[in-house]
Amino acid sequence: MAQQISELLGQAGLPARVDANRGFDHGVFIPFKLIYPDANVPIVQLSLKSGLDPKLHIEVGRALEPLRKQGVLIVGSGMSYHNLRGFGSEFSAASDEFDAWLTDAVCAGDAVTRNRKLEQWQTAPHARLAHPREEHLLPLMVASGAAGKDLGRRIFTDRVMGVTVSAYQFG
Image: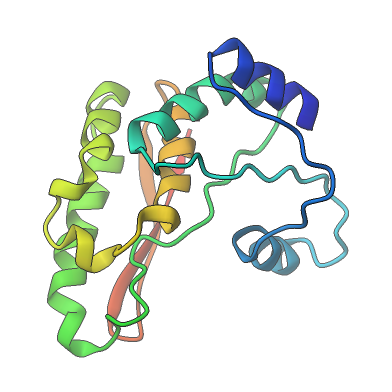
């Protein structure tokens, strides 16, 4: 599977290489340890591309879209709000505004609009407060690109340590 992913990325003009020695980071290890504690499913982790360009990560997702027809689950693990210095009730309103913007973007009526909005995530209200660095948001961009024309929907939302966090699903 890792080799197939590398080939799909290469065919899309996105250089990639397989590193069989790298372990899973916490964005993969923790969710899948909870979901599959017996580790009885194969997992391939992708690293983010340097430069952290949202458009490039959407393109990565587009290159991986054919995997969905093979029954491969593409998970964009991260958080809709990730500022370790910005938790608490004083950040509630800002997180609510960012979450509303993100939900509107992910749940847009068509994939072109969705991806265009996600490419411009930094223009969202309180974007850099919600994500001082974007590495916890970019996996959503990959999932959005892989979704093709399938629409997104919010499947979870809650207040955690005073801020709103949400999760989304495509298809």
